[in-house]
Length: 494
Image 1 (cartoon, rainbow, N blue to C red):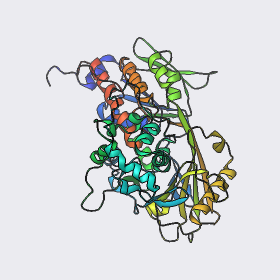
Image 2 (image 1 turned 180 degrees about the horizontal axis):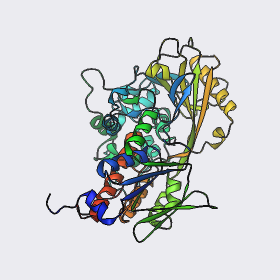
Image 3 (image 1 turned 45 degrees about the vertical axis):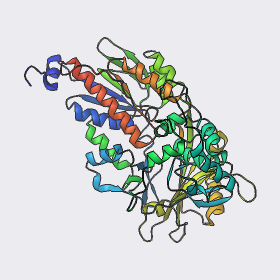
Image 4 (image 1 turned 60 degrees about the vertical axis):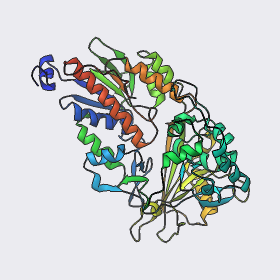
């Protein structure tokens, strides 16, 4: 277009290429770098990662000769962001879906089929949970439809309400303990009484109505034919996604280097990286922070104190994944896995250690003669003692749980224990207000954006959404400096 300055002309005119530093090499940072590359082909992108590898909570390992994911193993397809990214990267042919869809839940001392038509444990009708709850609990669920409509202030800065409190009052505590909490524990490693309703179940509070009516609206009518797949994954593991994003971003990757400080300069930003004894300084036109809340709080404190304080209000949880390979002749139940309600105990009265099992070989299939693969998730917010056990103790406890739940009693041929410390943000009753403060404060800083699981949701698709928004904001900022377009008026990284 006549009179418009191209990225190449702008770069040449300024005698240096645009430089963007992405802090954090997890899925958020990698997706942001890739998306920025599609927007600004001439920009120099550097990804700084404190760990010795890329991927963050996406990590693929070899277990008994099979590639398995020891972090996030799949993504939901209801939000299409991950599927779109996979296809955009040319990996659509490697997309796989579960071969079996039959999860279970262990509650009230029994293992039953997980109700199908629910939204994070809230049923479309009481018949869905009749096998899981007592008659009184089922009646309480049925009666929710007759209650006055629920009103939750849609303003993200307004106080949120507790999931456990609201659902307990309207559907009964039995539903919270036996279904809602196990499902939320799998997503957030959190407690229903501490998580915010608007933060975790936003689609249900978009209109003033009963929660049963809201679930009906969100789920829609039952499909006439086969159900579309709920989950997707990549053949060979999530490392495929990590590697392709890194390759296609054309970024300079620097591993094992903590970012110690962030400051403003006349031209943009300066980052102090490496050791305190021998620091290195990087100058950049723009920065994308794609790190967990504690790290973001520290880096933003001197430059965007309001955003730093808001990040400081986000609690984080830790967990562990125990991956097991059993002999090929081991027989798991005909289910994709089992969730455990809080407070469930062995027959001898000792509490279960795992909060969930995924029967990987049942869920995704396995070649004939290959080891039987499964994994256990351990740890909820506040359960520090459980995670302090050493690997041998943790594996022994998980095997005891497996034996009690399924009758499978064989030693593993190989195992991997992967600990994820402090990496799971808790979407508490202050979360939406904290995120609103973060996005508003960061959005006022030229050349700065944030991304990650703290902002839009903890799953892979939501994290990709945050990365896309951050990359778009930085792309628009860089373009505005060259006169290509007007600066954006929206929020950065929202």
